[in-house]
Length: 207
Image (cartoon, rainbow, N blue to C red; front, side, top):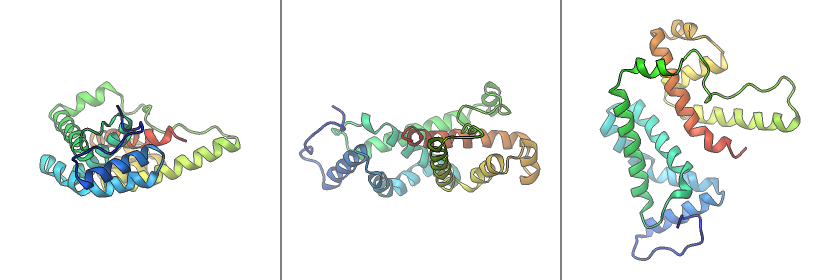
């Protein structure tokens, strides 16, 4: 049975595990602070776990955020017979292994499958010229959320996202501004957009 159902605390587990379960239940009941508390509890541990595997602080930071985004979006599937920490570590490890496996492939083949010059579905859609009050409110909430999430990205991704979506520069203009090869700009923006999408989608669906 998923943890979202009414359930007694499991017997024979640590006080910390019981507190994790309480926070998971609170999060599933809509308590946003519970998500923050779970992240505060395990962010450093997940980060250093991932860093040992990828050996790059920027990638480790992004993969840590991805791991929490995946865990929180799948929280209704969490089964309390497993410690939350164990479940979270498994998600982080699998996410990290996927990242390492993908990076062993030729990046060019990945980007040829989805044309980076074509805006992907993960990007926020432009609002209509004259939104009604409800659409205006949702747009404001989404823009606020987008800004908050962007601030959590590593500097290299944050800069590219800002240049692309807030300054509305072309790939060529971004390459010139950052002194990066055009292919690098496209590759990093592709990853940055997917990272944003994974983090934002569960929260945007609630707006």
